[in-house]
Image (cartoon, rainbow, N blue to C red; front, top):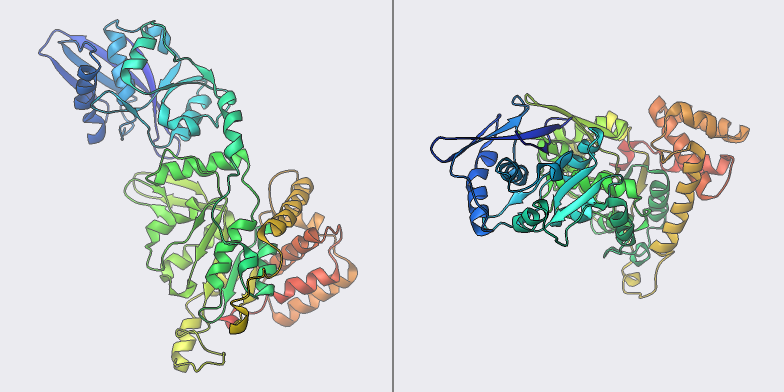
Length: 509
């Protein structure tokens, strides 16, 4: 009995699925067993139509398809092609040896075309962990599949082309080592994207400096100020000063977006900027659902999560950020599955001084004292304690707004400084961890505080009455500032600047 392998993403682990086919002398029918969902069961009609469109003989017998293991839920249309090949192998229309130790996945159209499937990177990674080194994938999934090394790929456009290849006919199809395809793909990993140049934003030099520090060390930022001062523009320009993604990061981000977005066959080469609306639900931000999927915080992995008007978000959504901001991972527990999704992002938030936005400015504030107090209390202490940099964004003089000259260094210049600082951190920690992402124990061995800087830090910590977490965040921010200055020692001026961004949250909200 032919065994054709495919993969299915089940819970956190996934599973290799053996597609078994058996013919019997009963009335012609196609039966699929093995805990298949409705989408898998509908493959019967897609396969019959595809066979007819490609002039491939469908056996006039009872065809029983078993998807093993039978106790694992199978969902989606990715098993279509594997079921079709199992039927062809059982009827001796193709050589079973041609698909031995090979995973096959793809969705079949009624015309026999093979469509791309969701989660191709995770499926291939799963196959590699089980020792499978050959895969047949849809041509539309080639850009993603080519990122993986040490696996041979055969990309097919239609069932007819694949049938001819597996039956021994000479075709243009062949198994190709993915590393060759990956080399061709690397040229596109840093393609430019339409982003705001940070030098185009008038004024706000302190905020720009804070964003450079945040990019260099992976720190979280809160921008506070009245409406119309450029807070949202600064956050959107931030993506342009971050370093380009590495090959491993492209692999991670592409896989997460393939699991959750509609463009699941696209290659993600730019750092993501996710900006959910303040009315977003907890599930959409954190992840989950009846069939657990990554949320906005995981889709911003290796990029930026931007919360505009931070205090306006639902309290449950704000408080749910506690774990991912600290652990860089989010645990989604549901009745059917429990999954850990990566969530290593830089968090940028904006807020107004009050509901109307003009408290403490030249313009008259229309809010009552109770409304201002209630607005300030929307963000809890544990959340504000997890933010590294607090920055005031002030109003800009109107006469400066129409100037055509750039204000400060361009994004490309700032980006080079950020890349150098990141390189210093990689060499220091021997891996890709930033100052913000490294452990407290590790940072103690690399902070290299001068005696004067130590005294200043301890005195300020006592005066501001900050928590132990905030204390270590000041140390990490100061170390990032020293990295930007290319200084091996964390000096007094570095601590002094880091303390400027550590003002009590109630003064800024």
